[in-house]
Image 1 (cartoon, rainbow, N blue to C red):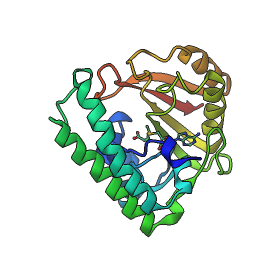
Image 2 (spheres, protein in one colour):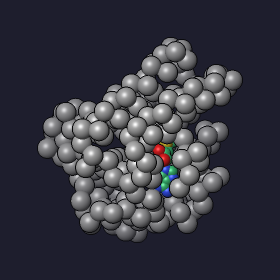
Image 3 (cartoon, rainbow, N blue to C red):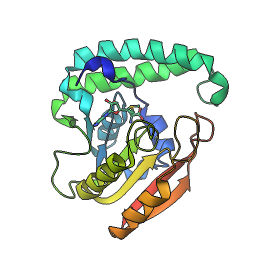
Length: 225
Ligand SMILES: C[S@@+](CC[C@H](N)C(=O)[O-])C[C@H]1O[C@@H](n2cnc3c(N)ncnc32)[C@H](O)[C@@H]1O
């Protein structure tokens, strides 16, 4: 995998708590997979809160130092692009491009330091295959990957990835958001929900208290029956 081809960016723990509508009491003593985790600080902070959290991403085949440099460059590039379409976003939380830059830089810094201190929490993995045994994690979180890049990742990739997330998860999976980059609901979502239900899981679309990209404010909440 060519490092230039990925964008290494991540959200903060606080953003994850809101986009997945997680309560602090749901963390302690439970095991989590964040996949793909990119430069998110969820894994670092969740472990501090008493969870056993693991991050997986194709990018982790590169060193923490190489990804830190790539991440800093990607923050600059992404925010320049985003500034041109700023009306597509809600600014109540970040207030400004500078506020957003602080949040993205914090997530990158916290996750890099955590990876340097706890290599074992950051696992290189290339979806649709994960290097974990069946039902390893109580809960799996997946943000800004599935459904969002429906123009690049076809429905078969989505199906295989979902099958793999169901396999490695014991209780619950939460996926955010349900829209593509234009805030349109992913075209094959109903088909994928039917597949998930056929595998013995409940699937529910849930409105969450997080909306940065306008219209991207729901998650898919899956529970093993
Ligand atoms: C837009 S980022 C999202 C990161 C994070 N979940 C968030 O919400 O900020 C997408 C991530 O997917 C990773 N990725 C892309 N293709 C992948 C694959 N086939 N398997 C695993 N990770 C992949 C990239 O390296 C990148 O870190």
